[in-house]
Image (tube, rainbow over all chains, first blue to last red; front, side):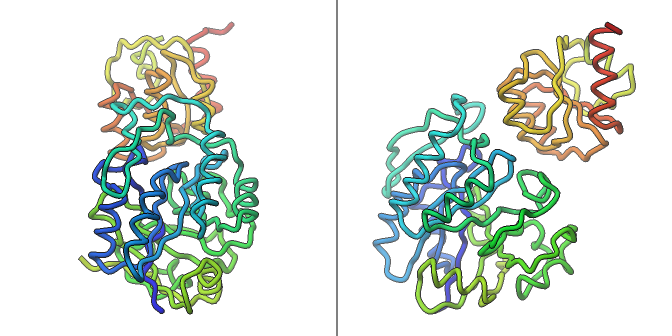
Amino acid sequence: MILKADFHIHSCLSPCASLTMSPKKIVEVAKDIGLNAIAITDHNSSKNNLALKNLSQKYKDFYCLFGMELTVSEEFHTLCLFENFETAMKFDEIIYNSLPYVKNIPEKMGSEVIVDENDYVVSELDKYLGIASTYSFETAYNLVNSLGGICIPSHIERDFYGVLYQLGYLPQFDYVACEVAYSSFKNSYLKNGKTIFKSCDISIDKIKTDENFISNSDSHNPEDIGRIYNEIELKEFSLEELKKAFKQKNYEIVLKKF
Amino acid sequence: MTIKDLIDNGFEPVLVISENTEIKTAYTSDLLSDVLANGKEDSLLITIQAHKNTVAVSSIVGIKAIIICNNRRIPDDMKQLALNEKVSILRTKDDQFKTSYIVYKLIYGNE
């Protein structure tokens, strides 16, 4: 099967995302533009994944992963993705409890809204999510893996909250994949993860490893969903098969033509 | 010390809300969670983190001005948010070490 996957989408739970980004809207737009696999990855929270789970069950051949975009204590972002919803929520609880308490002031920092699959507001979060958790990358990486999930460092070359910018190097782990930001791709069409450095205007020469680079939309608005996605060839949808497909480079990064 | 004192001492005014803003103390850090935990009200932040999240954190803490070191480029969305949040931005070619020394002298003299 061919998966058209955008695994980095923010919902209205992220303080920096548009309020129109309800799980319902995200799934509708994703289906509309032909994606068949998504993940809702809010900053340090998975609490809008219940709506995603309920929505995805309505559709045949529409798949999702559950998780979040974690801010590790070194202050860079990493996607933490799980196949199992309950596991994702267990991880969510661990992370939410670890966040230092800063009260969210919606007028100032943005709203953090939990909604159900019909766009009804369930609640608003009291804690500000745009803050670093107390988990270091290594601790988080090991925790996610022990729970059966995967860590994909986000927009590694970006000059805010990208691992290369924050640390100056990519910590050596057995990554399933690393994410390169959409902004590095928008002027070029790239065939696979290996050729990207020739065409993008950023310098990632610090990476000498043979990482598998993917890209996602990192959308905060409906119109950005799927602006870049991964076309992945795999036997059936499962995290195990996805891992294999990334490792064997059975995928292409596709930039959506507007 | 006021923002005007900083400008008079060679700091480039990128976005100044008011030259008369009084700065009581300063904090040097490149980790925003650290600024959130240890930053002081009515202070100045010395950092190389030139993006809008620095403004957001400053606004939460009550920091009145940010000095961006090493002449880092300051993106437009950072300036826009700073305008909304009434946080001044200055810039210098110096690094955080030297900037801290200059600012310390301006605030506390030679004590």
